[in-house]
Length: 409
Image (cartoon, rainbow, N blue to C red; front, side, top):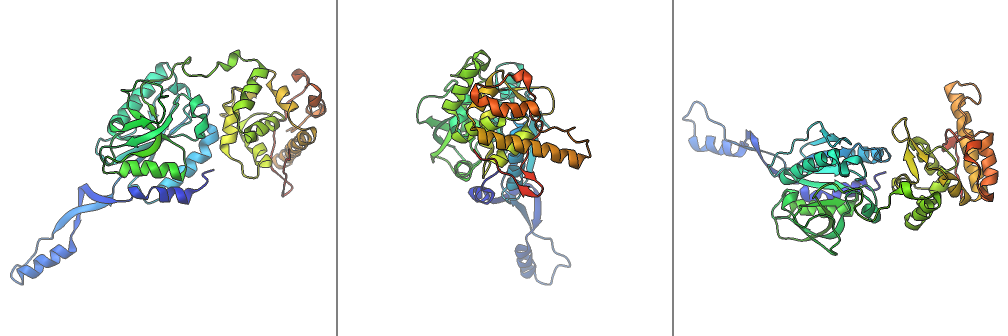
């Protein structure tokens, strides 16, 4: 999921420096030998020469958002953590969880010592990013971190989708007064004056988890001051109100408006994926498997576009459980060629049978596609089906009998 981990590690090299430890010393062998040589054989014992121990310059706090839309990014978070911890750049890498209620657990240590940086992995779509008690609590935490440490948001969504989040960052130029300066001390000049929030609010750098973005951020942290670097930032004023920005309340849109809105803004890959996901049950593990069968190189950004499109709504159950809003499924299925839809339906049925076999269940107990869903495959192209007369496929997958199964369309 992290496309170029080695390039990402190389991008952080400006931060790879060592400095004197404030609380540890080590033996200076050369100076001790010189002292012994100067004193000669007179003393019966010699005092060693000590010096401050050298250690890596920065410690990293890696904070990940645990909001309801973040399960799709869990593999990315794991891979990013591994790449950062194995880079040899940071003295320590500690992981913290940011909950939807606006709290961070365990409490993130942010000493104002100029030797701590904090990266927050978030799609900025959870409830703590919106106005309310959780939002006020969360933004107070962010402002405290920004005053004490170098803070940046790692935004897994592609840049063209940031405007639809609760932290709509804008491109511009960033500069820092000194190395590892706290984010509140940064200067930001946007290319266009489109930032939300008061100009007096501190800028919060936002970056994609890619080498180019992290290279510019590392240069910003390491710069001695005065140098302007390209980047993106948002004003850390306060949580975005529900009415702010250009987002329309999706609950007020008809199914046709939802699908047309998604088609106008989504990537071609995401729109194609949405049609195939409409064949089955939109639960995250199933959606990942359908995407893996559909795309040669699956990218989580395409799946995230579908999840954040407004066409899905969360349902009770395991994290990552969704359902299509009424009427949306039928419209999406109309855009999928009948042969491709049939292949997806067949794939779901095969995996349902495979689960029966592996789990020791009675045949048909874990049903991938039932007769109602098969009837959908033949009727959706002629105006859709009645949702109440069919069941959703229960599972989907990529492998069957040791051979890779690919869905075309």
